[in-house]
Length: 207
Image 1 (cartoon, rainbow, N blue to C red):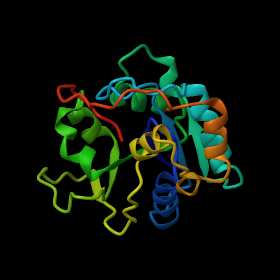
Image 2 (cartoon, helix red, strand yellow):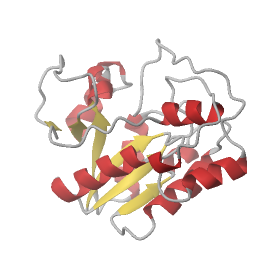
Image 3 (cartoon, rainbow, N blue to C red):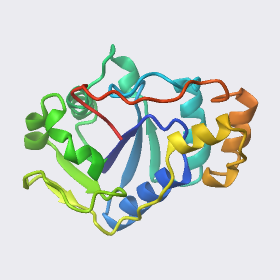
Image 4 (cartoon, helix red, strand yellow):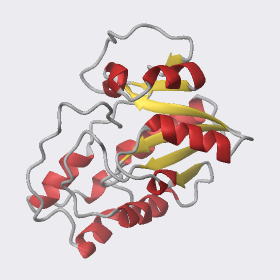
């Protein structure tokens, strides 16, 4: 099968994640999209109280009923930090019957040269790049294993916006799949987390 590997912290998952994955799956001819749940983005400080098990729970609730969406927790097997090259290689060994394309946004493509062993990724795997707000042109050189899905929707929702909104006691249930907001409030996530300051000097960032 042709699998699109969609990595992210999904902290929390929101309708933007699902819209992009749905579009890519249906219009870029993938058999399945796997939501690759990263234990912790190596470019961000740990600011969330939503553990990886709860993130998995919310994703599985969100994608239930759409058979082309799956979850993938293979990165939980690694010690930190986790790098994409290691993930792709392990998936290739574990599922030799499948091919895996990496799905990233234009924001990550712009810093892809900072990823660990990025040339090995480029030479051994295909990458699909979807548009992100504010980045209309790429400065990175072309590569035969990279293609751009310029028609994918640019959904202006972010997990950081949702976390901040909940921290400020805003009801943002309609930015997320049905029932996810209620579970987050029941768990008691995000209310007391500090303001978020992304790191700038790490070698790899994931979407």
